[in-house]
Length: 307
Image (cartoon, rainbow, N blue to C red):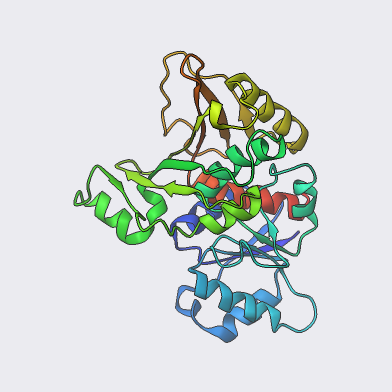
């Protein structure tokens, strides 16, 4: 029975991963005593005895834990890192199994997997199929206005919203230097830096990532139906046995509830068209703590451990 340790299990993502793993009798979940969480020797000894470590830490702490594992003698545990620290690092496999055909197999064989960012999961899910299909040039300027529940903002933001002291809706990272941009560019192949405009709303979980497009500005002047077909073909060929990415028609009322996929590992893609004006918006909907964090980590763990 494989042994798994969550380094940082007291955080938002760590707690959700722990809840899911506790429901899996195929593995043994190992914990460290709260008073020993910063004890390097105790952590080293624990890591030496497990098969897989999930890092739910800030970037610097994640790098420290990886260095600790690197220093182990003999067999080392495999790693899933939920931080930003290794998402574009050499030697790490990107943990979006539906990214392209063969990605799930790469995750299954990997020693080190970098769990994607929540916004990045939606953005890459929207952009990569269009780039691969030749509908969206790599140097095309794109915008990604998006909104997430406040649970993606870390402890200070969560506490502010739950105390009722935060605004109902707030755009942020308006210096246009968000930490998800490097992985969005790397795993979509974009050479033109996208304009990513995140916002947070007064709801705990849920996410919408939007890709608005002037269809006539694209080289081939595609229709919205062409975009829809590209998504359907891409995910039909790259989906794993568990089909977590679904391509669906636009809603009849032209509305989309950001919270509808909460507490799932599902991701939905829809294309909303206005062919008269030659406009379209592709939208990815997901749970920022599900497919955008803990759900993705558990999906990757199952692939890595063959569960």
